[in-house]
Length: 188
Image 1: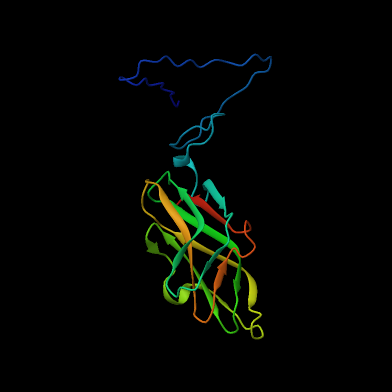
Image 2: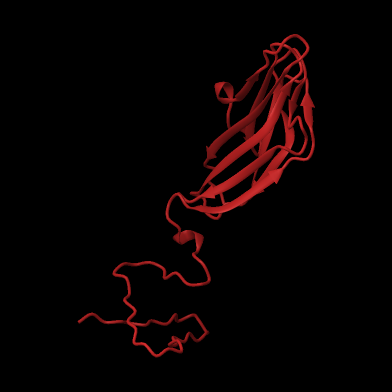
């Protein structure tokens, strides 16, 4: 015969009571045959969530048109901060924004920084090629995502950066108020 043992915590001072509900039906509560934490109406702790679960979501809608003629990356106003609940968590970054290049055959490059680190250097950058007729430029809805492993439980800030590929002015969130950055903490 299996035994049920209720063990108190020697350093605790509170009293825990197990009480039956007000009911007229006999019920049997079968305990699981594995170690773990019992889920209650207080919610599931993030430490008990299975891998792949979304633990929290943070987003920010940009409210300012950003433009540059610089061929070096400059920060946009699309930025958001998240504090991971576990150092093993992944952060999924999703960015959407209207992009515009005001000259023929110009380029707009977009990337994401974690604090001061470029997460998409080199050929991984989102790139808009402007191939409109002379002087008309080119519009597009730029969308990119990145799965990061910050390995920390401290606050982490993700910011969208952009630059001109030369030959004109690059615009990020060209309509103003349409850019959105979303951060999702994913349990590993």
